[in-house]
Length: 449
Image (tube, rainbow, N blue to C red; front, top):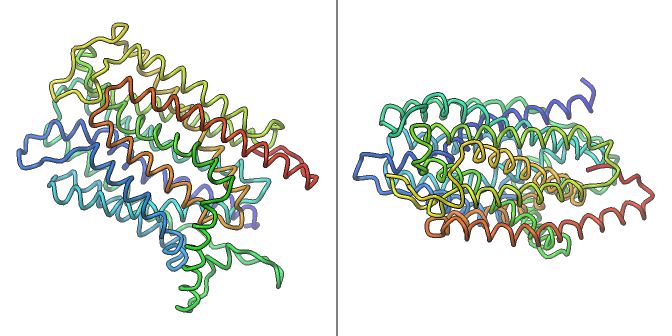
């Protein structure tokens, strides 16, 4: 297999592995709060929102050390270990216990930081300036198939159910645990890249994430990775992109945990309210896949850069927020087990709810594919620290959003996303204009997304 063929193979395996793991994890997050509110076990006092807040809070802190851990262990083995912890978290729901639930939340937060840092490094190592846009789109589209498969099963299995029994819960989470383990095993298929650098070439990524077995060298790379993360955090480009990244964290919380809970709480949806959670996840996945596929495959033909895609993303999201505000009861995110009978500004419509799910997914793919692309372009030689900072900011904002989701009515959650999204779009434009100017100064063709 040619070097380019091997790189593309690695990107596809990376995407498929993440697809399996996040088929399990995102489906788990989508139904966690609904499952917990239906638990008959009075000894269990957990909260799905609180669990996700812990996960993303620990994830954000762990991103400070994840580049060092990846430097010591290596990206491939880092992803394998992380996948095992994802599977353990999902398995907790088979027989929930409060202490195990929150302990697993802490452990998966650490594992997620390592997983995403290693993913960013693997994506960048198997890309160059001309293929980073295509590869980001391919990875994102494959990853988002996870929203299709898990939620399709939930939709079919829970159709017509208004209460989730113990048998229903165990069947779903046993299946999700197995799916997560399959994705973990697939990481072993990723092939290592041969070093093609000429002697004397400077490559800080190789310095940080080299293959030397020397314990001293590994420790030196770990320290260098930590220092590089701190240094990059205060660069102008990273500070500006952090506002955009913060917005993706808020949106991640909303579509992966809050919106499904809102749909499941609307009593006017009748006996379909629980199965609609799965259908909503499917439509989010369709939007994510469509966006990732289009922006990845058409990246080389795009002469306008990344800004038009991000502009499309924010417009699509604003339309979705407007329709959700009119369609969903204001107390839906914090409704009790009995649900809510309130009405917003229109009679709740299943069709409008599913349209909003699609728009949320499409807009999210616009932002994330372009963030992955610009980070890979700007920090091709410092990929692990750069992607660690990206996940640090995204996850800490997701943690904050999951925390306030326990208390804030729907209208305030939507308002926060509108404000942060507006400013995040402006800051992204600023960085992209700078990247275009840098390319022009080098005499390169400005055509990659």
